Amino acid sequence: VWALLYAAMGASAWRITKSGSALTGLATRSWYFHYALNLIWAPVFFGFQKLRLALVINFFLIATLGYILPLFHRIDPLSAY
Image (cartoon, rainbow, N blue to C red; front, side, top):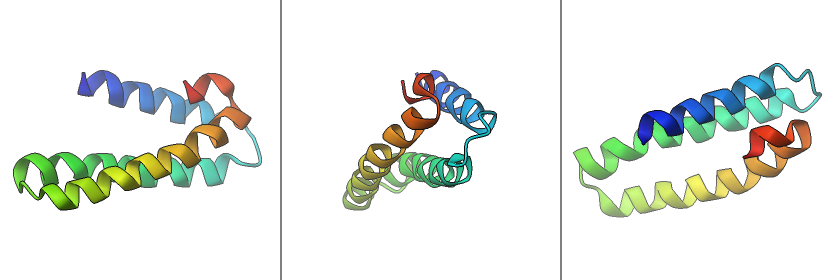
């Protein structure tokens, strides 16, 4: 499941970077921030068992996703799915 999730995220980001839109830079930076949050969540939750910190990271993940999806949709609608 995780591999499929990260592959889909990578494919969406690739489509955005190849779009040539004026919003590509903003979308890419936002995606990298969201991706970094994704990468740190699992060790925080499973490894360190810092449940409250993991919950805070989850809130940031949801917030960044709410920002990224409409931005991706404006650039390339398929990338938002």
